[in-house]
Length: 152
Image (tube, rainbow, N blue to C red; front, top):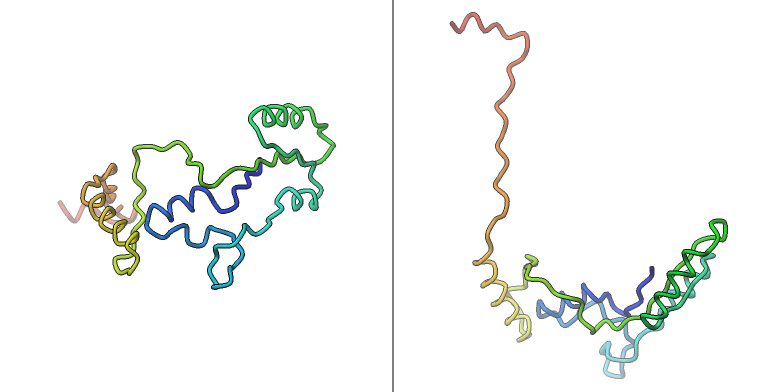
């Protein structure tokens, strides 16, 4: 399964949640002012897989995914690798959870989004509780040749 979301969906969302505005995960052309706000860079992952000898099944819907899985399962064992290529939207969120990932946020920034994210990070950090206790250190072993009779 090869998921094409044009920009690292989960890492991009994490970057955005930390006030970094998806920095480094938006693959776009530069506009006239030098910003990376142009159209998406073409990244033909399906073509790349084909160039490596894979049979590629391109999917654009749930029904297409179900058909692609059936086709992949029916593919002959000696037919080479099969890749199911799924085009997705990186801005459609995945299901969330109540967990919190401890990723520090820059304390010094002029971006309002980063300043807000740092305030939230500090609040979450104070509420964090350890789920594991530190491991106990084992007692040092005595060498087998040590004479214990002299201690009595």
